[in-house]
Length: 144
Image (cartoon, rainbow, N blue to C red; front, top):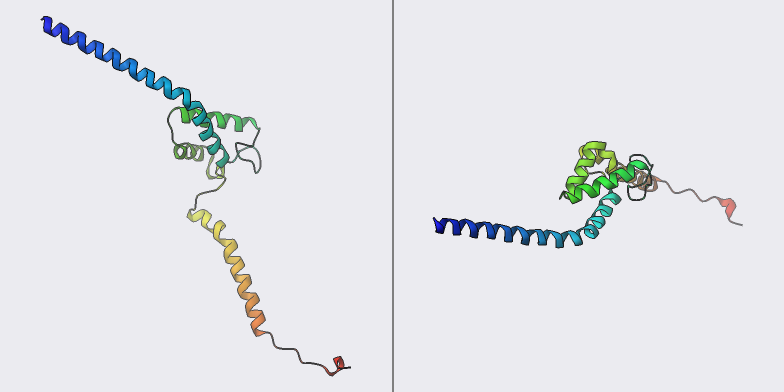
């Protein structure tokens, strides 16, 4: 019986020591975390559009909703969420419009490639017009 009590006492002591060591590690990482989290939150806020302000990202906007969303980004980073998970959360909540640079999908492909197609068509038309143009006859009046 005494050996069982010793094993239990040893187990309890090891558990307490390991728990204390883990708490110290968490304390040390939490001292550095706010600066890192703030930098990550700023990077994410710069890539998202403010739903209230026209043509401003969350970082630059001073609207109340932008402040709430910046706080939400920071809270989710504290909870261990990744930048992609946070952006996906915001897109699910506010729609694709919240992204400053929308992802390339079948719906946005037209917006990305239409200007290039239009420019190509105008360039083709211009080059064809220049190729089919006939030389103007020289008039005798210009010789004086």
